Length: 239
Image (cartoon, rainbow, N blue to C red; front, side, top):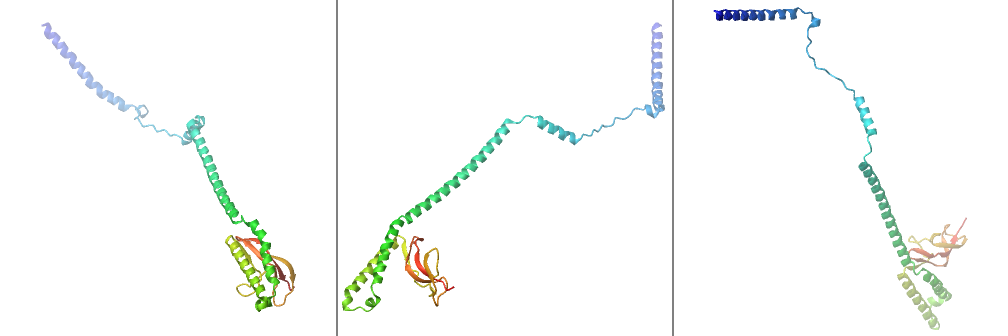
C-alpha cells in the first residue's frame, strides 16, 4: 500500500520537473530576443595594431650608440691599417731599390766609358803635333816628289802611318776626331754648333752664309759620344 503511494508521488514529481524545463527554455529565448540592441552581446573581432618604423630606427640607433665597441673589430681595423702602411712602405722601398740599381748601373757604364778621359785629354796635344809636323812640309814637295826630297817624303809617310795607327788605337777605346773642314753630305760647309765648336774669331766671307765654318784652327775630339775637346774654328759673319 505504502509502496504504491510512494511510487505515484515520485512519478508526479518527475512530470512536474519536465514540464518546467520545457516551458523555461522558450521563455529564455523570448526574453533574449526582446532585449534592446544595446544589450546584445557583441561578436569578437580581431584587434589590429599599427607600429611606427621611425620608433624602430630610433631605437636601433640608440642601441648601436649604447652598445660597446667590439674589441675584435677594432683590432681588425688596426691590422688592416697596419697592412696598408706596410704595403706602401714596401712599394716605396722597391722603387728606391730599382732607382738605385739603375743609377749604379749608369755610373758603372760612365766609369767604364770615360775611365781614359784624362789620359785621352793628355794625348790630344801630341796628336796635334803630328798635324803641325805634316803641315810644316810644303805641299809642292809632297805632290811632286824628286830624288832630292826622297828622305823628306819617307819621313812624311812615316808620320802619317804613325798618326793613323795611333788614331785607330784610340778609336777602339772610344776616342774619335772630327774635322769641321769636311763638307756635309750635300757638299756644303758645316754650320757652327756651340756643342761641338768653339769660335775663335768671326769674319766676312764671300760665297758663304752666316754661321758657316770658314777656318779650322784645331780639330775636335769625341770620347764615347761626349765632346772631349771642341774644335776651334773661324765663323762667317757677313752682317
